[in-house]
Image 1: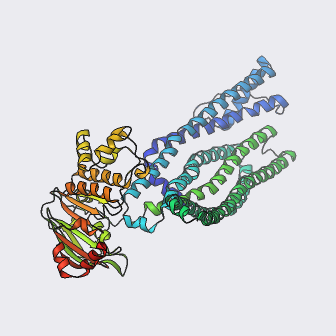
Image 2 (image 1 turned 45 degrees about the vertical axis):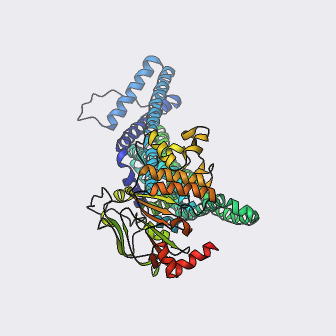
Image 3 (image 1 turned 180 degrees about the vertical axis):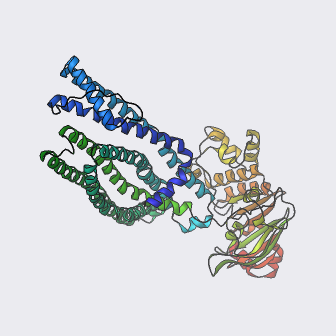
Length: 611
């Protein structure tokens, strides 16, 4: 556990070393002030109870002769002089004032040491959250097809919160308490090394008891966090499928499923919290046991007349011992808090350490413009080993030409076009642009040449303007309006309450399907890519919307190299070449009239659509 904790800290502490150094300095300062404030208790007790009748005389000192006994002797001599000159009560008042001042300085140091840790704690959590989000942005699409979106959201929210509540909150504890223990033990050794050896012998018993409680917390926490991921996944599926749930009157069924998941989470959480709550009472009990055992031993020493320690010094020793027991209890608290955070960090690291096979080459070839053609050379691809969804596809897309991919659903058309911008890498074969393998180009350069208009218009909960300019820096309003006009979107944008500054809702929910698609076309027009991929851009639209979108697409396709996927064959009649796919393979290709004359698979698809 400690090794994993230190590994996490080494990853994230570096920018905050100055805060850490100040925290250590301030904690040492406040702990020594704590000890010195308790030292004042000894003369106070002696004055109140007239315990010590020894007469002390001031002894001169030098740096060479200075030691603990000399300091104690001269301190007592000064107090006795105060009593002789001003009386016991006034001396008691003065000692009380000194105790108050030193305690004020100590508490100020404690506050400062905690305050200086706040930027460190919040900064580490911010860095983890930022790193996690950036990794999610960089991971390939295949990662998210294998993982539940709700579980990923849970890792980014509840698990990061778990790290904040346990690991980062324990950093302050792990600095302050060891320093407090070190300072107190040093003081105790200087007061009575015999008693301190006895304490060192007794204390590990308490540590062993706490270890028994905290040992299973990490594994329990992993299970509970996974169950929380199930809850978020269920909620995400419910919100996404609410229309279908209502249409099929499945509210009761979904309620039962959620109740089952929620009950599992409750049972796991209850078990973990009970074990967690057992730690503090146990540490309280074991700490009291240690103090009582030392009290018996010290009382035996004093009552039997040994000269190891006097009564007032023993009371001071017990105060310091209590000051040690409290940090030990706080450290035991860390032993059950940290495993919870480590369990959350394991789930976060599942994403942070996930392999991303889509990488830039070490020395990429610069890709400034599209010059010749896109070539697919014997390309195959599989998600699962041994089950190719694209099989030995070869085709050419010369610059300025439009090709179309048609075929049944599941024939591999969308997967094939996803290989061109490297959303996935080919399993075998290669894809070339300008005669070079696309894996030799920087991903940024490659995707900068390609524009996409998909069947589902992917928009963001933002304004029309920001959705159209998405991914395009420094676009002027005139350019945005021109792109919207070409996409047949300007009129309905201007009819909205705030024009281009109108919010369009989550995923463009305030717009019709045709309007969403025209906004995504305007976005592609503004990007002005030389290569355009259209993935069934009109298949989900009504006739009127399709006409407007088709007009916008025809304007967009002018002078661009276009790869279009179409279910409606009427929309791609004029393509320079049509490739017909069946179960991942190209079974026919040619122009529309050639394929009709061939009376093959394309003709069968065309006739079915005519019917």
